[in-house]
Image 1 (tube, rainbow, N blue to C red):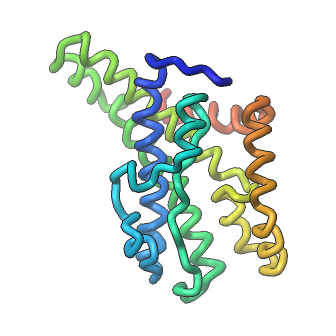
Image 2 (tube, rainbow, N blue to C red; image 1 turned 45 degrees about the horizontal axis):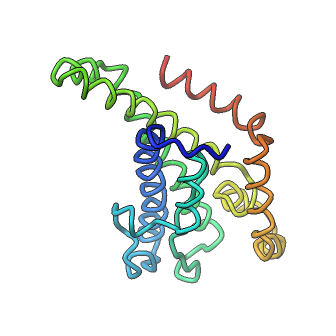
Length: 209
């Protein structure tokens, strides 16, 4: 699990950072559209990855080249007309951004864009870049599916929270750090693989077949 491989990091990390940055930007953008400008005032409505990087999340990313996270975008639900509904929409925006990125990159392959790309540039430069874009599909797909797991503090829980009693949601959020620790343990031990793999495989086949 902990594999500090510089060559592998050079390929994976740029797309992970891109995926995490777009994910957090989408949360802030959705919140802003729904009436909460907290993220905008905090300078988080930007595609600059350094504005979204979390020190611990980045260190874990560098150590594992698989698990990592960005700083959550600040959101104040008191600025929403319908706080429960709008918080769910803000939560949905992050994974949706990763799905859109995966779809755009996959369409590039299906429409032959990367064949043109390979013909335009020298093979020593074009082939690694095309491979990186292919991995970009898989990475963004993985980020989207992982974050859609309905478990606190992931976006999936904040989406289904709309359908739960507000008191129950409040109590679960109070102990969301325990859920975060459990997620790290499940990720490190491979327990999440049977949950994510079937869904990931299905969407990967749909996008890349």
